[in-house]
Amino acid sequence: MAKRRMSNPLALAVLSLLVEKPMHPYEMSSTLRERAKEASIKLNYGSLYSVVESLQRHGFIEVHETVREGRRPERTVYEITEAGRTELVDWLSELFAVPVKEYTQFEAALSLMPVLSPDSVVRLLQTRRTRLEAEIVGTQAVIDEMARQGLPYMFAIEADYVVELRRAELAFVERLITQISDGTFEGVDVWRRAHETGELPTAEDWQRALKRHPLRRVK
Image (cartoon, rainbow, N blue to C red; front, side):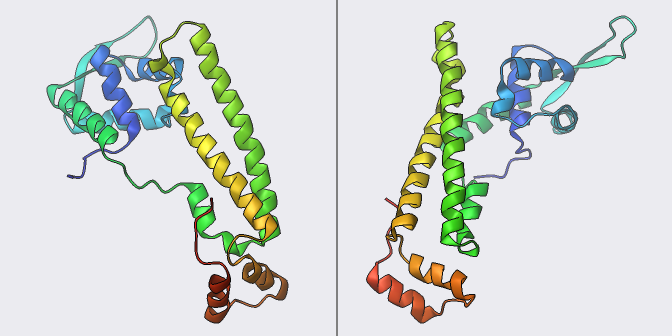
C-alpha cells in the first residue's frame, strides 16, 4: 500500500465538500459544523487553512474565483480538480477496506497499568465506566432525535459506530473491574504486593503467578 501524500482526515472532508460545489474555507468550516462533522473529524479554522493550502500544493484543488462581499476582505473560492476526485475516491476506498493500527490513549494507559496500584486502577475504571455510560446515553439520544426528525440513517451512521465502540469498551471495562476486584485477574497478587512493598517483582514471581492462572484474556 503506497504512502499517501496527505493523511489528515480534514483534507478528505474538504475534498468531499468540493465535490458538491466550489467553496471558500469559511463556508467549508460552516458546512462541516452544520453537519456535526467535527464530532468525527478534528476541525479548527487554522488547521483548515493549512489543509487547503496543502491540497492546492498537491494539485488536488485549485482556485475557482476570488470574491468580495461589501467591505469584507476578499475570499478565495476553491474547486476540486480531476486529480482531487481520484484521490478522494482512492483514499476513501482505502479507509473502508483496510484496517489500520490506531494508537488510542486508553490502549496506552492499559499497557502501562502496573504503574498504578490495583485499587487505584479499579477506582479510575469505575469513573471511566460512569462516563462511558453517560456518553452512550447522550449519543444514542442524538441518534434517536435524528430518526424522529425523519433523517436517513446514513446521517447518523458515524454516531452509531461510536456508540457500538463505546458499548464494547464498557463491557471490557466492567469485566476488568470485576476481575481485579475479585482477584481472578492473573498476576494481580504479584502486582498488588509490588505496590505494598515497593519491590519490583522478579521473573520467578511472574512465573509462579502464571502457573496458578495461565495467561488468558479478560472475558
